[in-house]
Image (tube, rainbow, N blue to C red):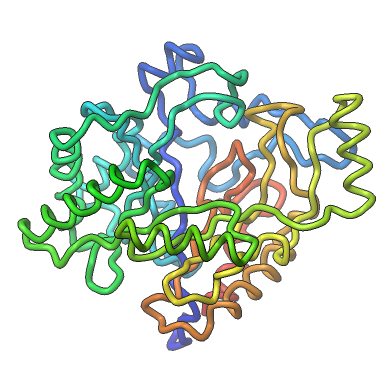
Length: 365
């Protein structure tokens, strides 16, 4: 990539759900991984791109070191700064899907930057492929003893030379930051104290907020996060605005009334941009695609018009949107590196090959 100037710091969310664990064996059947949903997906309407079939890396197992090395090499060549691994800590020391990251950490390989995003939510409902109301595992917040254990568990990662920083502090993303104010504020204050006691400058906390569209409400939520002690906000937006007659009719007739097809919305950067994306410590998020039907069938949402060309156009627009920020804060989250069952991935598949990775390479530099 020569001496071309970096236009943005692109951090890709990374799903570790591609290896079997006892809990998934119990809930879904022996050997379940995310590939189970990906492989059984069906085309639900004319022109619906399903199933998605991986190309270069195949139906990989993240317990295999060579797979993790190959992923890092693809990301590095595309200009991605690092992976943000989803991190599952349910309280009372209960973790899930930690093995791939633990092996990356302890082995020192791949030599590729990383950070952690705490996916602090109960596994329930259609988002996890369940009927509404069903619960697989509950997210809890037991108190200081568990908060301290949690910190000590991730401290070796924070101290690793590969860990991604902002303003000299390791970045830690929190998916559901809007707890009761006192709990969240206390958690952050405690971790900041522990960080300094352990030789760190502090922790750079990032609140992940969805639906940051309307300006006044976005400002209110942003200010709330700052008061709780967050350093920045990640604006996670999928869609907003008037659907237009075509899409309203489709969803009213075929989805709501006849229940024949999933919900449909157009893939449009203008409908994903947040009201505060140009603020220095607000980090927007770009999605390469969205199709939740492998997990939720006809209850899922499908974005129409997702192609590498459309992604490249949207990526260019997002980078332009944050171009006035200093590079340290010119951060763009990519959702995602490998969320195959939600359709948002950039790894090579049989239909598009390396085109999503090529778009990244062409726009980031």
